[in-house]
View (tube, rainbow, N blue to C red):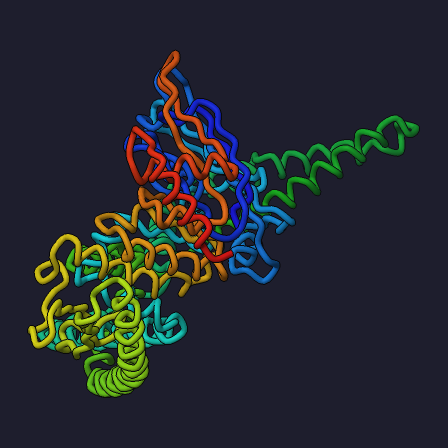
Length: 555
């Protein structure tokens, strides 16, 4: 239930704190006092649309805080866990709104998106007002209303799931047909291109390797000349190696006479000779590697020309030719196997269609059964509202296949007949203003509480009725209050008298226009209900009538 509501700087409310109770709670006051604005403020707390104009003039921001008490198994608790918000004894919802239209939302002091707040609010508070009345008149909304009454959530989920799978397979089948048809149109080209590429036989990384080899081959002549010069400088007559050996021989001839003075020089010459020989061997090895096959450069050039020519022809990089070859092979294979794929997908799509139809028929059967119950329940509510001869009919008709969808294969339409023997027709066209209000009220009373929301709000649902009819409205709201917390904004003294508690909403224009909300005690309720009966001048007769209404209400 809604335990308390606090409002700061929203339209006509500068500072307001209300502690609420269970059962039927009536909000009364003169027209324009701000009763509906109070409900709009609560709407902010449960995720309804916010606009900067709702912030009180002269204030930078407004805020609404709503405190709810919910049982541990209420669906809102699971939503909180999904957001990693640990459920607590109380659910505290806060919404702030800046004058520039920006808003922020918090649940148990943790920031949340307004979208999440709206989802949460739908599980807690159910609003029945003029906007809902307009929605009831639109045929497009009737299917959803019936599904809610029938409790079709699980069946709707099954239909949506099977519909999505059917459409997915249909799209896959259509895409495969288009792909194969396109491939068949290009089959001659693919066969010719594949033959060319298979003859070329490009290898991954081949162009890069060939380009590197070509660069090397183009430098072979210069490298060979340098190698030859180096070997000559070392080994030719007069070269370094021969001169080192000659120097060594010259010193060796006088070695014995030098008394060891030439040993160091001879050792150095020996080492230098060895190093020179190693250099000759290393250079000779390079020379051996430079032996390219005759015509190799020409062959490399031809291969590169062929690869790059094929790449230009097929508008790819040369490195992408092997991948293109495999793609052409796959496309041709797809043409050959495409028929089998198309047949398989067509079979799967047909099976999915049948699964969808089975789920849709289960949903349709539930709708037809619920339609009868809804009609009977609404008729039961119409008689006390002085419309005993009227009929309410819920039509469930099959849709054409082109209109089948995630909500099933039915069209649902509410029709009414206001007089015995009259042909039923759309609510908006058949019913007069007063009749429309009573049809809507009967439907709302039947639908109220069909969801999980423990708080029901009725905004002037008794509009256009009075006397015994208004008392019947109050009796129905009181009955609902036995199962839910019911807040009703009303101008009807009969409805207000039925409430367990009553709050007066009144303007205070002593300084700036503000609105105050006061809980009425016994004597104050008598005066307010008398005012509702007689107007500005409260008469003794009005007070007596108020006493009668208050004494006659059921506890």
